[in-house]
Image (cartoon, rainbow, N blue to C red; front, top):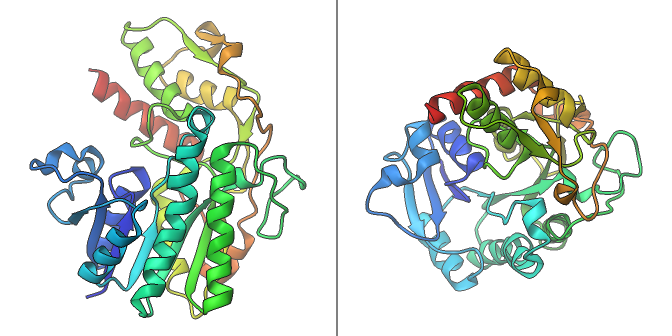
Length: 322
């Protein structure tokens, strides 16, 4: 039985990955800041129906000594670092915390693995936000990075250190440069979930408007359940590499809203209010990934399209609101 350790296991990606690995026959361990007596309080794990199937260990990726202890205790074959202070907007309000958790935290894990002197395989969750002020209309692994937020800068540091540990110490360390990926478990602070939750409340008569910032920004949106499979595939190869994980399709926030509202028989323009205070200090107009390397080397491509994902999220939010 293979053993995997997941940081950020209680988040969206962590819960989907945990379920995926359990279905593959793994023994799954996860790091959480606080152990709770009632495992049903880990909402995302409970939503997946796996809250009793994973072994949670209390700790933080900000503490190297704790990570060394946890790796010794879990003795994993694979480590997936999904822990992050992950809101781009909030990272502007807490840039130093973002740097510590998202950037230095990844290096702490790399150091703990190196200290273990084992052949653990490591996955780093990198982000398309690292491309920032894009230099090419479609972004691939060799596209130059130009981060435009504290979150993106911290992710780039973690990504660069993953490459350095691979090249300097021969570690099996790779990064998935993931474009936007969503699900019913996405946090309410992210625009897709903000939209689908508002649509549910508006449909049920509990809200009468949806305030958004730049709705002409375009993003490459996929489903988290597809993307965690790509993470696993990266660690099954003969040699480590970095991969862009994306759908290859860019859609504006405006178009995404149209999909969500039309699904419940409403017109988005009747409810959307543009709020200039919600614009980011430095926004990115278009993000579009080229997943060709992942398709050729991993045999991976996205299966769930945007329309199906958004309607799934709206359905789930209607159930929650009801």
